[in-house]
Length: 434
Image 1 (cartoon, rainbow, N blue to C red):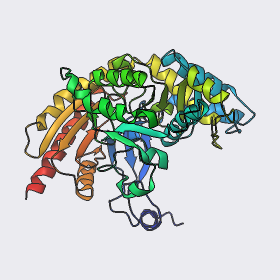
Image 2: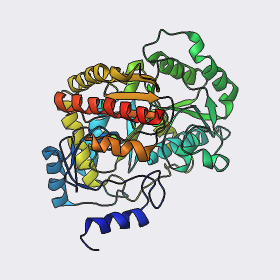
Image 3: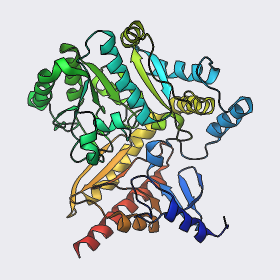
Image 4: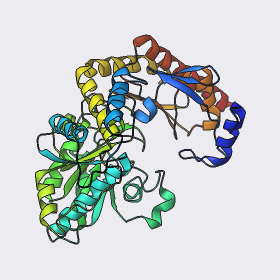
């Protein structure tokens, strides 16, 4: 292909499908030349401060020398080897590190290659668990409205069934059980009525339920809502009472994003199965993990056929495991709590400027997550070029203009990012009003 930038852009628009898009693209595309620290450099020569951490994964920023070194060192030994019948140090060291950081009752770990697959694995674990126990009727999942768990078929079935991104597939997906979304805000005084609908729904369906699956504390791509830790604590209590497994999807919230290393720590509980991904490799490669308790693994292994029935080709890819181990170690050593706390303070102070603006429904912050919720869905074809023109990379969806910046962002860059978010929202709403 010609090196002409216009030719590349035309080819991209005419032939390449981007996430949640059509061909040709519904939105303008901005071609990246490189990325360094918290800056994305376009082929146009423009630099953008990144407010998205590449969909919440690049927590250490881009082109980090320590992570680069991990990939470089590993590739000299092997880029990949199958995990069936073979094993290697990068996988063993990574699993040991993850088990040391998560709840002590999470004792077994399955490594996969994306967040959606980690959720698929968790659902399979729950179904196989009850098959092994002889309760073959327990084959449904229960969740809450407003959630998001991935784009593969089992994962789609537990996403919001009406307002989610997958409603078009409603008649083709496994029928699951949905309770009302949590109505209790993160810091709201607890009222037992907040859990009533969930409790009634669980009790009514307990005989058919294999597991409850939730995003702990933060409902991510389904709406960026933050709910009370007491709600999650009550969910765990009810799962124990009605003998239903609890799966927690920490793919978005894990590794410090919510202000805790894992969001379930706010409720001081342990799930039966835990899904991790996104920030696991610091945004370098696709990798995910599903952890479970000894009880879950022992039961599956003791039932027919005596095996867990899943095995991705690129499971435990050595390159991905090596950079993930380096990323997790870097996080642990970095003082991430102070970084996230500082980000939260700045987001709270700066984004408050649009709280009373006509067209803004809510402004909320938790950890390194800042959300401006509008009254109406944004027009991406209009608002995205505005952000780029203002020197920042923010990717809204639906009614939500939000940021999840890298933890390494320094105060002047974060203040600039927030002020350009505010300026762009003002500019966009002013234009929409006319």
